Image (cartoon, rainbow, N blue to C red; front, side, top):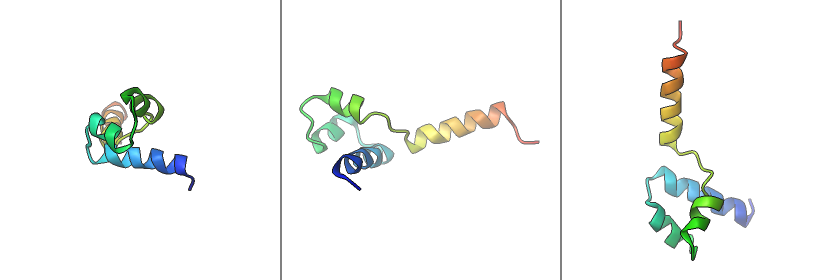
Amino acid sequence: MDTHTMRHSYRSWLDAVGTPIAVQQKLMRHADIRTTMNIYGDVVTNQESEAHSKIVGLALPRA
């Protein structure tokens, strides 16, 4: 795993445990919060995944 991949994983883990974005910015040592949000922001959290699954379950109930 290279350094860049590890940074994306680290951001994903921070999201997964509910770390506020301002804290993530500081932990990742980004001078601009837009870097944290835009470059490392394509993360699907467990909460998002769970919400999506629930909606799919409503739309496509199992028989």
